[in-house]
Length: 310
Image (cartoon, rainbow, N blue to C red; front, side, top):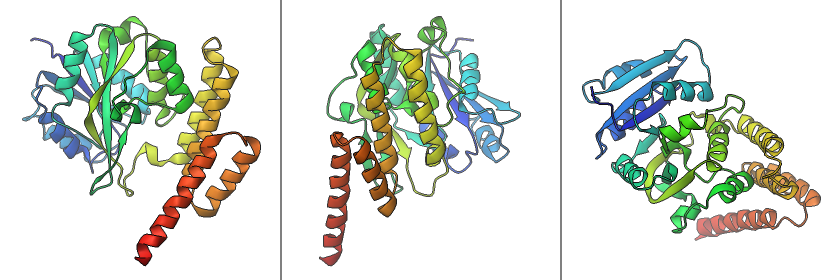
């Protein structure tokens, strides 16, 4: 049997509400030379039944299960171990992939041997409309820098690579002993992987939306657990400073921590936001991003009130 060109890996944790939509988007890809490897990470909802119902639509489907919940890092490593394809496409259970996603990514990896990861633009969807496109670097027509510069971009400003639609050159992953860490819970698993990868091979960004991210307010996802996510991010910033002392300067570290402060501040509402703003401004009065955030928040409040009056 000829091995597939692409292995689509899909970690699943309580995915029954959105899994069918994700699978439909994978089935309808214009590029069809792929396998799907799904791993159910220690849950007992209807995800397995939904996966089984797609066997007639997906010719090459492997379903594996963790007896207990291992977390995203170990699950991703197990999925990678089963991948037969030359390229490995990361998918998530609550995202919708536009039909040319795999085709466009394979085209880049086939043409550019120096590229180890290719990603693209993500659309944030609130259930009714697209509210934002990410990352701004690609949306504005820019391209990811290389090596240390890309590493510091993602360290100082947090990850600017859409991890839920990455396609990875498997040979680069294997030959450099890369792996997904279980040390950082939540989204930081992908962040640490991209940081390490950026010092090994180039990461290319496609100037086109490849994925629609489910950002409905009632969704259940690891990215909705902000407290755990923020703690993991702070630990990652600290530990990478010790791991890469010749790459990350003290100023880079301080800037990254101020970025984290900004993200935590922006996640707060009303009086909690104001308290956080005052706290950070007292400690870092020269950080312009705090004032920009505050002015933006006030402008939105005023605009909302004026809109209601009209």
